[in-house]
Image (tube, rainbow, N blue to C red; front, side, top):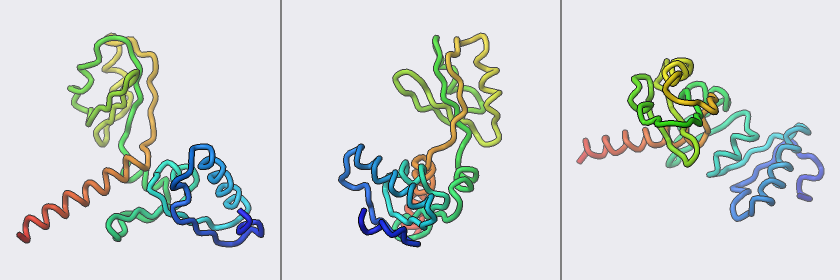
Length: 168
């Protein structure tokens, strides 16, 4: 912390959260945000997308040494994020996965996350649920950087596997 007491113009952290407990991570994140607010440019590498999502205005995603995306975090979410809805309900919601505009479902103990196909409107889902389920919570959610990274890198990995198979 002493190294940044003079408010440097540029600060670089290499995997700063590695090995830190959650309280220390929060403290370090607060220091990084404070540096940013005081005008410092803060660069850091991380494998924990949640940290990048909390403070980064711009992001560089790298996979196997190659750039996957560089730009504004908001642009990344707009370009690659899917419409998603967090849904809590009472009743049998097994029919939701069969709705034509649903891309996928992630089920958790007390709720489900419904990813909609490109161009689908969350209102379509809400209307399809009306009268069939008692909806306790219906919330559109922004895609996380973690999910987008997995989507992008997974796509690159599949393409690379296809290229390797073509060269074999």
